[in-house]
Length: 473
Image (cartoon, rainbow, N blue to C red; front, side, top):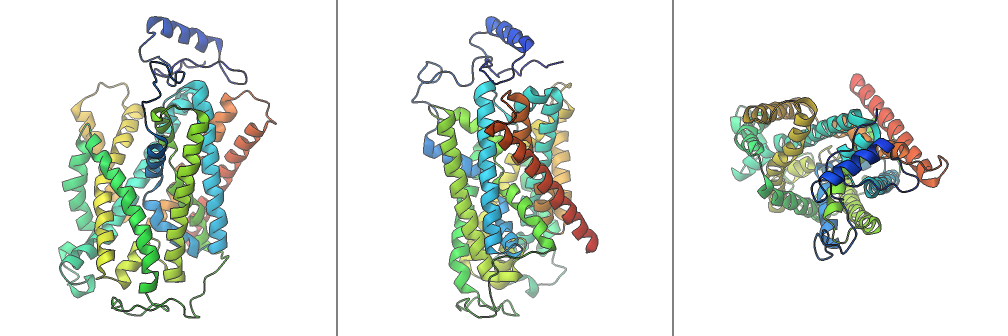
């Protein structure tokens, strides 16, 4: 039984080569007759019409910024570790492949969007596989968001004690191990209860959207500092952390960069990259807000946004690796905290990222809570009790993960090899294969099929290797 299209999906364009059942067409015509100008109006009406005047919407540059804002996140802190375990050339090739496939999967989403006029990733799942597809996509987004929030709070757990010690004019080793204000787990719990949870409870947190932009600028600032501070840490790395006055160039022969490298830790590379480039749940809303929206215009936005993000990711990973070489931490900022604990610039980066993290987590709570309510409580009326309980449950799960997961690479590895690869590679290709009625040997369908196979194989292989690595340890 084919489900009716979601409300707000607009008129389905029954162009040649796309799936459109007679029942869907009939139901859509009935809805259109009932409400010509209501929610069922086309999402992207003809350019220049009264509904979509050409001077409304986001400019090309602002749309690129919004897309980069959706891409850039905590993943940038794990890419130097990925480079250390794949080599400079190996990392470059893998990062280019992931970025290219991410752009291609966005093109598939845009093709389906222009034909079905849907407004969300979940609705594409509904069109392709009915309510099961919508629930599957929503559940995947929930897990992805929980992983993203956990990675942010892991940064709080690892970096906040050092920031507190820095403001107290000391370092962590100079205080008693029993000092409560240097206990990462306790500080994480306090900040989650006092800051994250109250902000996540707000029904509308649009004013926090500005902090998302701040987070993007802080990540770019971090990348610039990584490039500058390469010459502030000597090579070989000192045994003590008192290196704030050393300004020695990393040119010692003992520190040699590897072009290709393979180890058990290499299994984390592609999942971390997939985690870092995931922006697909934001692509369709950005497309809807684009001034004079068209598929080719949004494709240019995608190529520009992903290309600039690739450049920032690559430069930060390269200089982070060339600073610490094989000693690079899975969370890059920890290395600077260890070897430059009193550096003013590093302290400003640390404080900026902590500030952005604490105010970005409530933003991620919002779509996660919305997806939970849709999947599990859609039959219940909206109430404050349900709102509070779901928010509390999500916050508790995320805090527990952040408190007891020992390393941020585990979050990047597991979430990246499962939900990130699904949202990035598997679902776009699968939905395209289902919705498009082009010949199977057409370039578009062959590309979609290759995307699905790549996502499944790489995701499963990475996950298996990561699990075996855990068992080994």
